[in-house]
Length: 420
Image 1: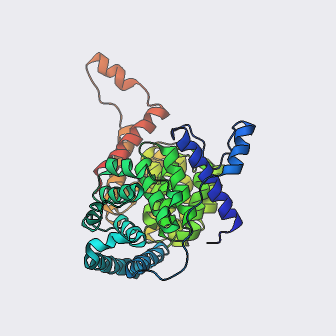
Image 2: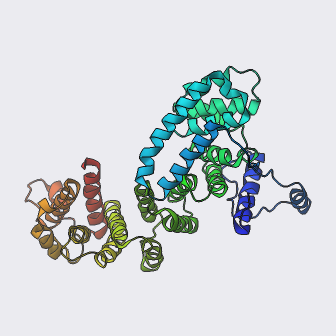
Image 3: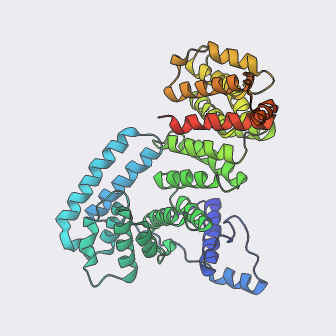
């Protein structure tokens, strides 16, 4: 297997970082893959000489029917990653073919290492535990194979803790590349809830071991969603750009966009003009329709989270990409007006909201419009006369901008909870 120099360098850097993290317990303070180690000179020299284990290279030659069928399934997955929906339907048929071959082989499936590897890959990709259990009775299995098979069973039935215990004994880099990438991806999903830094390293390794297909697509999608809550703005932007450039047509791209939008708001990438200009460089790599949809999602999320500057910038960007009389333009204006009802032009924005046809929007946006109008009414309604001195004093207190914003954010966020 020949890797390009940059890809190989990135892979080796991730491997070194992973080896260092596991040697020291893989805690949350371990350095990210892109950071150089700062050990003593003698240790650095020793690391250069020994080096981490490299993945086993698969040799060309005749393969079993099971292996060839599993590879067919993987090729379909790679087509899914670039947007082929027919491949998604075909995958289920091929997975059923895999199941038929496994049943035909019976207990003999465990007799060859090649078939065992194919069996594990199939099980991790939607197979049933029954496929694997027959092999577990084989007393000649190596410890590594036993852990892999047990981990695959546990993972396939949702026993994440058991799966983690089995897979954490396996170094993916000692496996054949096709299996190594799958195991690294699974280890990442199991590890992220308990050790984010180590889980991110496994995602790096998975996408570098098997680039260009569904493994890389899934790793990038999961990694950007995680980075969106980690504060690593630079890597979030880098990997988001990489995903959009390579997999924007993926069958699962909507899932990526949802995580991307959350990250944009969480990391403040639409909070000021400078950050938003950089964000536009990434979003505008999408088709105009997809970019407009993404800006509208950012605008709505910003509105519900109380980051109204993000809403204003995102709606302005969306309006440059859509027809003035389109439903998308109406949504952009709805979010823009709602974000401004407590501002200096609040009364004007309130009138514009009232003039909009509520029936033109989806139910969740109808609720958002209603909430924004109630906020505007509440802010501008004069306090009721009250004979109770304490209540009179409270009503007489002026509404500060902070109080207005808090009131608006709470009311609008409630629409997100209640919306279908």
